[in-house]
Amino acid sequence: MPATLTDTRETQPPPPTFCPAVDVRGFSHQDRYHILAALESTMNACGCWLLDQRALSSAKMEMVFEVQLRSALDLYGALIAAGVELSRDSHATLTRLWTLRRHNMQSGVHGNLVSVRLEISFVEENAAEFDLGMVGLA
Image (cartoon, rainbow, N blue to C red; front, top):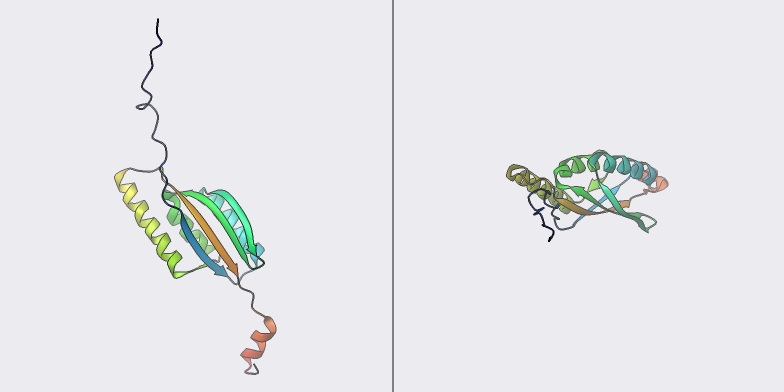
């Protein structure tokens, strides 16, 4: 007697769809260890999956992660709250993600994943130059 196959397409939810990867760039004047700890906490709160983290140079860090599209607004606000100053293009990219999220929430699509490459530059100001500049001696 041949085994009967059941159609599982109706019982299983569709797999999540993937949006294109986005690049986000920013900088911070704060201590890199403070920012990285804040980002780790932020990413955990937003449900991000960290895929890669590496130092590009002594003053630049790259993080690659995935986040659900429905958490795009949370991620945007959390990056700002963590002390990352985003570039103009990054603000526009995150705003587009939020708009896409709004559209997908209205159409009932909830499983989209977004791959994000976050590049952060750590700006360290020379304290001596800053003090001399403040009093007009530089």
